[in-house]
Image 1 (cartoon, rainbow, N blue to C red):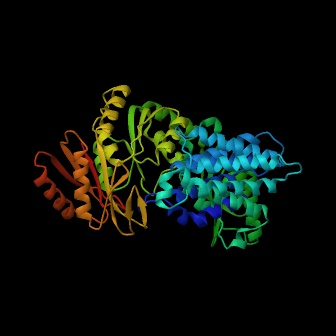
Image 2: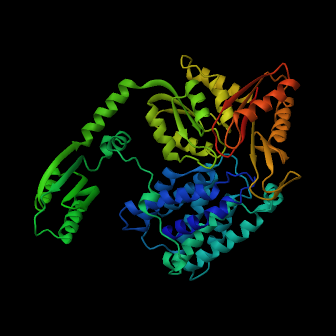
Image 3: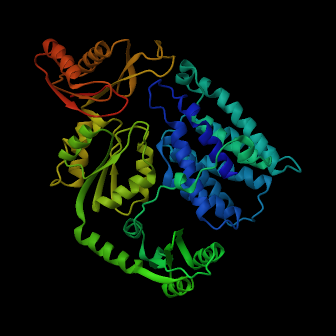
Amino acid sequence: MFLMGAALLEHNKASIDAMNVFPVPDGDTGTNMSMTMQRAVAEIRACDLDTAEAVAAAASLGALKGARGNSGVILSQVFRGIAQSIKGKDDIISAQMLADAMTSGTEAAYKAVMRPKEGTMLTVARFMSDAAQKAASVRGAEVYDVLEAMLEGGEEALKKTPELLPVLKEAGVLDSGGTGLLTIFRGFMLAANGEGLEDLDIEALTPAEAAEEYSDNESIIASTNVEDIKFGYCSELFIIHIHDDVTEQDIDRFRDKLCRLGDSVVVVHDTGIIKVHVHSNAPGKVIQFALMLGEIDKLKVDNMREQNRQIHEKQLREQKEQAVIAVSAGEGLESDLRELDVSYIISGGQTMNPSIDVILQAIKKVNARNVFVLPNNSNIIMAAQQAAEAAECNVIVLPTKTVMQGISAMTGYNPDCSVEENTEAMTECINNVVSGSVTYAVRDTSYEGKTIHTGDIIGLIDNKISEVGADVAECSLALVEKMISSLDDCGFVSIYWGEGASEASAQALVGELTERYPDIEFMVRSGGQPLYYYYISAE
């Protein structure tokens, strides 16, 4: 069911992305939910599939690690509630157990959102839960009946989302997160019907596509507590001068033995050589099995538990008092953030929302007792907050919704000040900046009375559409004028040019603005951001 749900979502992610309320070229709900599901699938494939409880727990853990964007975080909470509901229950899921699990998932999702809005995927989940409970209460109900009722309830809710959320009605779209959730459960139903991926001409996700792991041992070891290392020795070797009577079946049997002995098994056979990698607690047996196939060369055995101790001792010695992590995309923007004392940049933002796990790994990597996180995107804030809850240090998520807010926040940061002083100063800087951006429309729609056509130029102030036009320069000029007029006393405007614009076009814009506002200081920088002609801040 999970594999089919993930595959069906992946198959439909582009159409779900296109359902974004704003017609900007970075609608990413489908992509975020699909990448979250892919990570759940990777965790499921890695676990021992003895019970439904194990599968649900693996899906919950994987989705939480890989959750991207608000929709991904909410989806991970649905799976978390489901897993908690069936924990310790019989392996055979009854109709009532499934209904209770969905109810638990919905409750967990609502709790995760600070201010839940109806007309979103939460509403779809709630309707599905209510329908499931109603179906399960019928005498003789089976799991199939509950699944069918859940889909009907979800369809009903999805149709109602435009009535519950006026912005959807005006844009002429259904809620994209709700559509994604329903798509996953349609996959569940297809699996219950006995359909396979091959019946739908959908390719299964490969482990490489689904996984999001670090490839080097040190990263894995450093991010793990020593008591959690199940297999302590990393063995790597080459088998050379392979015995003449060794067959492919012998190599397969050797690989199976290693799989029973440990994990992270790699056995690659090339002409005259076999490369071996395995984590185990019995490196001697690994060597013994290898010698049965040929001679050993370039043997390396590392004690990962001792490496773990040494790495953590080093981290403790080198731990800083404070550090800042920021999410950004674009060489110029990243350079400016580093100059302002950002310790670590997570590459991402529009269309590239980092997962909870990626943010958590960044928090560990900066090695500080107190870590500020600047999401710089409204769709990353929830993932950052979830990562903060899972972190072992003190994490302060400043809810920056734009990169411009993030840059402004950093002008208030001083590593020599206390955490409390920095929090106050950075928050004040965020509140004093107005953010603007200029991009293009990817589809026809309407928003707050504005008719928008594909290819139109769109200007946004604090992530709300403010200007619509046919010319980048004219739209940008009008946008900046609105931003300046929204402030009582604007003294400084920054313009970062990105994809589709140039330094010459940015300087021409500033030239026009300088004539109109001689008392305001203007700065032009190369941002390098994708999809957006300009990022603008007014302070």
